[in-house]
Amino acid sequence: CSHCHVTTTPLWRRDPSTQRPLCNACGLYLQQHKALRPQALIDDGAREDAKEEEGPSPQPQCSHCLTHQTSMWRKSKTGQQVCNACGIYERAKGEMRPLSLRGNEFKPRKK
Image 1: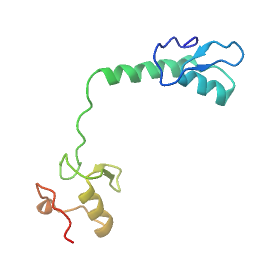
Image 2: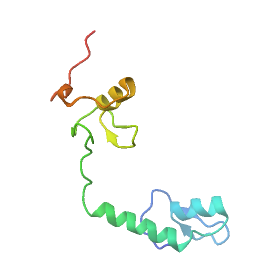
Image 3: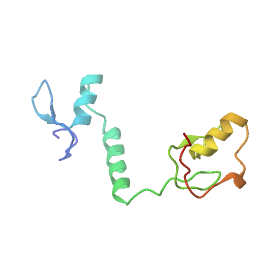
Image 4: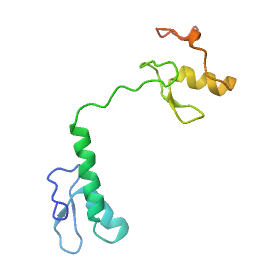
């Protein structure tokens, strides 16, 4: 990229005034704001890339029952990440799901 100097991008664009190549991020920013992408945004993007290279992120976990497996992750009323079962129970009953209801396996729906 002629502005931020990255060498990989999902889509290369061109600066309309100079015809120089721009990465997708710089090209979209220029198109939307009619100005080149600020250095602060470029630096933030570099930090995000470095975080991704550190390794895989930890597996999601329900903040209530501590399970790692669910068909869908939800947010509790307090904003914490919960599994599908805990989230639906809280929404329906207005309170957190008792841990005694926690099962260790998925049960298919009966038809």
